Structures are given as C-alpha cells and as structure tokens.
Length: 88
Image (cartoon, one colour):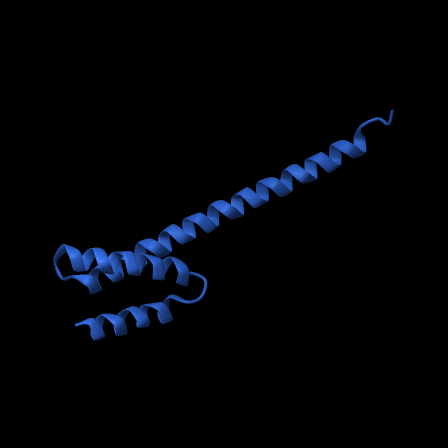
C-alpha cells in the first residue's frame, strides 16, 4: 500500500506541472497524512490535498499579481504628480 501511495503521489507531482507543483505537493502531503490517519484513505486524501493545494497556490499568485499591479499604478501616479508639481 505504501508503494502504491508513493507511486500515485509521484505521478501527481509529475502531472501537476512546475507552476503549481508546490501547492500540489504540500497539499498532497498534508492530505495523504490526514487521509491515512482518518481511516486508511491516504491516496484519496493526497488527491484531495493536491487539488486544494493548487487552488490555494493559484489564489495566492493572483493576489500577489494584483498587489504588484497596484504598486506599479501608484508609482506611475507618483511620477506624474512629481512632473506636474511646480518647482520651488
């Protein structure tokens, strides 16, 4: 059973791709342990954890992208204000 779980988790890691691998791997590890403890359903827990981990990683990346865009917009406004301000 441990060998099967190792093979499946490794397969999930390969399928997940590099962009979302961290979220999937972290989620699969936590979900696998939780599923195993909850009733010998480690593989099901790993798959569910991978899905949730990818979702959380995507959500975090989207939030970081929005924050970067807001910082860039604020910097553009600051430059425009500095150019139009009268010199003393």
